[in-house]
Length: 105
Image 1 (tube, rainbow, N blue to C red):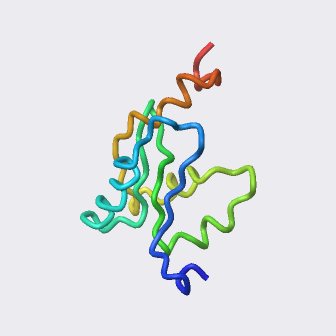
Image 2 (tube, rainbow, N blue to C red):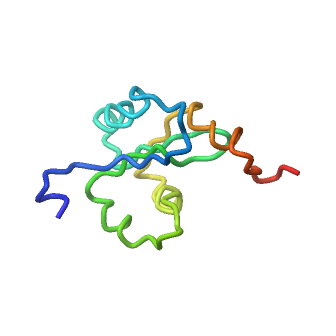
């Protein structure tokens, strides 16, 4: 269906990253065009994740995810297809939401 709609990819972004700007959202597409990598994920706070761009070839992987499952497993299991870009603005949700980070007390 995505191909019929003319989609080349999708950017996933949660609502709890208010410091992510339109420039942050444009960067993955630009990086994908220059690198040829089908996944361009953000790197911040010692982790990888969203915002992330998945090209059309990864839509079947996304559709197989369980409702409560995030897309990090796709990123991590396809490292050779993934380009990581720094996005410190995405760290906001970890620092300000009241959620504990791994290893914190």
